[in-house]
Length: 195
Image (cartoon, rainbow, N blue to C red):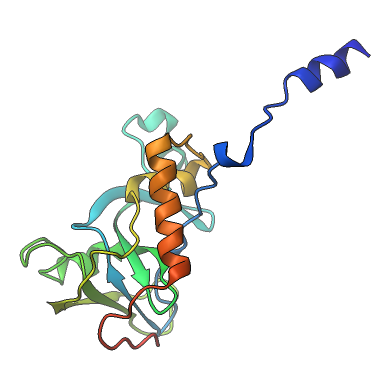
């Protein structure tokens, strides 16, 4: 009986306005022979060393004695990530870039200026799930000042570790404003082929 009272006292009750559920951002990557496209909403690529563990990409840790991929003897692979938005509904996505795609695209390397507002297309060559990916970034920059964006590192940490950071009142306002913008509708910049 006393254990139940302690359990009830430990419940973390919250009023609805105190709770902010940050969405899980899906990763955008083309399937075999496929092409995906999005508009970029972050200024540059965030790179990270990773391992393929089971059927998932996992981060590499500097301390190899606690790195799951290193302990399994799996090779490291660099991956880059960008914040993106897919019209017409404004779906926020993490755009995943392979080393080969990054190396083959000057814009992704930061040699053509800020990436915000540019359209990116990723195409996977052949029919293999691990086929080479080619990236193409448009030279034209769409008007992107009201588009939703997010912290790429935080989104990856939520995917990899399931963490849901507590949001400050300023963060809650930003999320509320972002969701309001999504509900009100986002203007479609130019033409978009969502093959």
